[in-house]
Length: 398
Image (tube, rainbow, N blue to C red):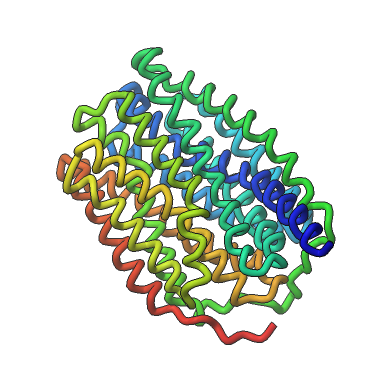
């Protein structure tokens, strides 16, 4: 009888977390990363430099930082599920605005709004998923990692249509592409109803006014996560432009992006064992090494097979890194501090990814090629892996 009850409960939890995962599918998979698919046409039509193109994602990252700062206080006020829904709706509004607005300043506003909404949904959803996975023993790591399937779904679905749509409609069709991405986001948003079960239980304990997350004990993993933010975002901002520079057509671009998304979707099955196998920051270290390998491979070979391996390695591991930091918070802090702990991690990550796109864009404008900037980002990932390896589990009282 116990086993019979455990099975359906586990299956319900899987469906609930997959429903919650539609929030990062919209906020990150589409709201942030689909920008790379539309960027080449926007850059040509609007006559942007690479620094201006990168700045647009820097603004998005700044919005993400704002949302991360707001997430825990807002969740304490209105609840985690309402915070998740509010963030997702803000992202959808920003996608629609991107299909209408044309000026650089207004598009910056849209990217800022997309980042803030994505962070609100991500912190709230990650906290809900961590709570739902808590009582499933060894399967908890797998359940938690299911939440991070969401971005892969958004990446794969947007990648399957956007390059081919722009190619069919012709140059200057970037606004119609954003319109199509808005419709895709609305379709994915319907999956959020599966996540409503997460709001049905008792509300999570609110942090006491004196509770704080001291930055010293998790210092190595925070520094690692900062550098991860600097390094990974360059790949996800400029790889489509890099492919175009080397003559890659819309079919190759679509296939490459779909493979990144597919990697994200298989991530829980490929890497969730890492969270249980290693202690401290070592799970993050392992996943950062895999992410770095995926990011650097195209710099050695632009053969389609090398690009496919790069996309799968990078896609399967880079959000597993994010899941790894959430697992670190879940393991090392009491539940009442999970929203605040995930928020601190997300803030650190946000600061890093604010610098990445504009830094690589400026290097590209100065030196005339994307490869050196992408190589610099791979170096940041390597240093991040070293720092993560130094992080020990915390000795904190509940």
